[in-house]
Length: 161
Image 1 (spheres, rainbow, N blue to C red):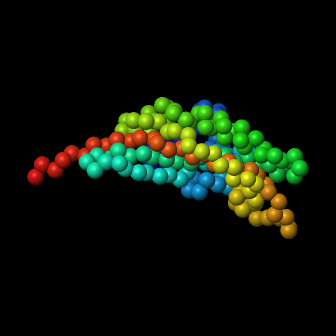
Image 2 (image 1 turned 90 degrees about the vertical axis):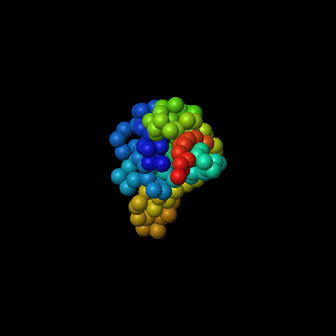
Image 3 (image 1 turned 60 degrees about the vertical axis):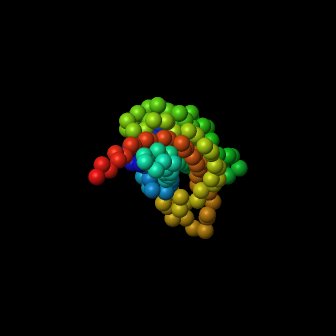
């Protein structure tokens, strides 16, 4: 799973021309504390198997796009461009042979885009910050993308004893 997530991170950085610190593998989809005004978190995952005598696995992962919007007035924040960035990430990763190849030769099918979820406004805790004063106003917006069906096949030799 780590190789797949690292391949996704590398593809996002290359395809979207991201700067250092704008994309990383994280445990929970939140931006790193030192992230800048936009951040792509590669995280999560799932694995399922459909065979008894082989590992015919389908892998999944998530990408959360977070945009810092604190500089805009509340009535003009909208999504801060989070949806546009998420759509670009979706295009870069959906059926990406670059991700499949970088993840390893046992991956036979590239990741497939499954869904996008608007996580809505995010408060200071999303950014690892303490709220100032009594304000709990949103400081950013986030969109979560889900990918799956990235097929990995490993054959298991039969026991000859």
